[in-house]
Length: 79
Image (tube, rainbow, N blue to C red; front, side, top):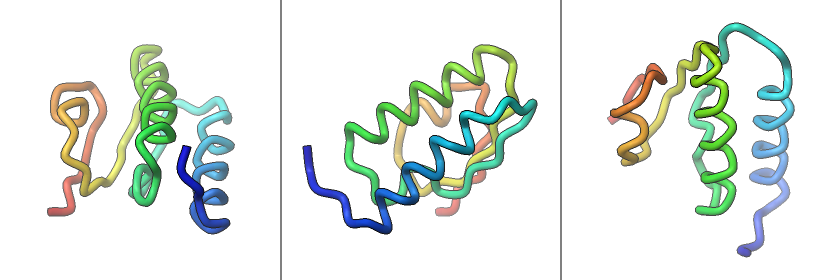
């Protein structure tokens, strides 16, 4: 995989720790920013699993991803 700088690695790990908390709602601000494809896929699987369990997900994103528009995840598009 590609090398991530320390800042980006911390952001990714922080996102994963927050998602490990058992909450009804999750608010994620640009969770995919600066992540490589592999890390985005891992994060998407976690987000989609929570959404399928009935957890509320609100996220902001500049990403062009069909999963954002065709899901139960509420997105604030920043474009």
